[in-house]
Image (cartoon, rainbow over all chains, first blue to last red; front, side):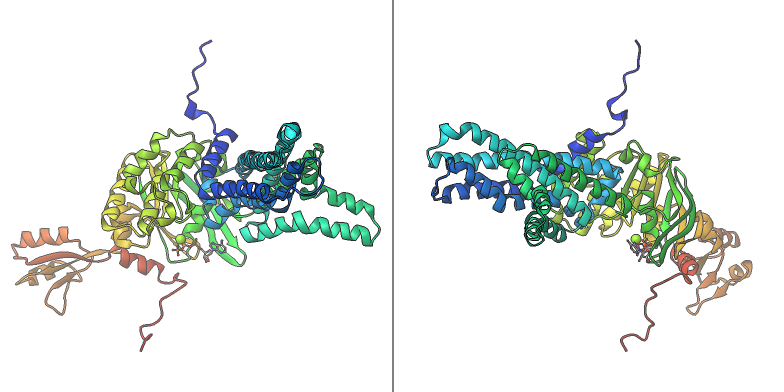
Length: 251
Length: 301
Ligand SMILES: Nc1ncnc2c1ncn2[C@@H]1O[C@H](COP(=O)(O)OP(=O)(O)OP(=O)(O)O)[C@@H](O)[C@H]1O
Ligand SMILES: [Mg+2]
């Protein structure tokens, strides 16, 4: 075999190069670290402030679940959408597209990096919060297994949520507008569906509400892993729609 | 090489580029001129695949931008120096680009050095002055050592040192056989930098020619000073004396007038080129195409 060695720089560029570039981007802006610190601080604060009341069998797990559902998921949503809206706002997306002309490749690279970052930061913050609460309430050896599962599930939820938010950012294009949409999607839409289900006596609307990202996320974090598929569906749909918009519009 | 064929770009009711056909050849600095809103930046955005043309094609070495396997090694562009994340340092901005093109990381330090930004490279781009941002943008364009360079008003905001540097740079890049396409509103600078000229007005091509031909077609002239210039005036058709006693010789460059004066044995006190600078020629060419003319002189009375 005398195949000429293909010189590294002559191989066509691919998704790996785009992912590597996006990773550098993420690690070289302060906002990433603000979000990471904010999320961890939030979980830690909830763990420390929690009174320990109630009769839950594993108080520390409840702390993690509520901290993420009430506050943490919004921090992650803001983190995810900013990955694209900050570039659209500064027009630096033109530099990105000049380097990587394929809109699809750019968005998939962003989704990979944003998703993994959401997963890692989400899991780390949850481990910090739940761990602290468990130590405070003296539950540690007993809840360790369940806590580990919750940390993993929360990581998966927040990773996928960050990707959903990224897609919404590409769809809406503005930070403020995209954040509004995410709050509607996470908070308002399921409430409206529940209300409508009650008023119209249509229980299938309750089912729909259960498939919205925040409620699917709650169930995932509670150990119903099949809801990861629902969130995965949301992520694929949001990123796909985002790619469609980026392709159809002038940069 | 860049080839535009019947390129048209409309934004709603505005036709920014209107049936533009153009070929940019290697080995030349092509100056891209035209009034505000003529469609220069739009043309460049379409070439980079940032805006989709309404009709027509823009090809780079025969393929559309989106099909380039190594975009930044093929064509380096500076469209908008402000299009940088303000929170990222100049060096990190270039690191991202280098990695996206699988360029060696050492290339970043090289281009930073060559644009004189090494000392500011670790500051956040949001703190850069206009000229520093412009230098960073030029560094990004040079990063992939591309055969084609396309710069939208790169001289904007550069200090005199930077202006001279970029003039030398662009000319040497063209001398190496690269294609250099550069827009500017600074005619005197363009006259020194470019050897080909493309002029646009209201989205249409007005002129596509060499700088020498453009200036010659407008007829360069000379202004001569001296104690006794009547014989010289007789030697050139159309020569006439100006109010201050100097002799105006339209259509003849100083080299030609000086040679004739020497042959006639005349004493000269001054000899300079006048008239058709690129600025004059440009203004004449685009006079009808200016969409945003300055207000009349009476303003402010
Ligand atoms: N994104 C856009 N949406 C709508 N109109 C646009 C857009 N971009 C450019 N135009 C219009 O297209 C025309 C050409 O603009 P362009 O920026 O290409 O001109 P230019 O030659 O670069 O001008 P200048 O010398 O001022 O930079 C203008 O009328 C401008 O208003
Ligand atoms: Mg312009």
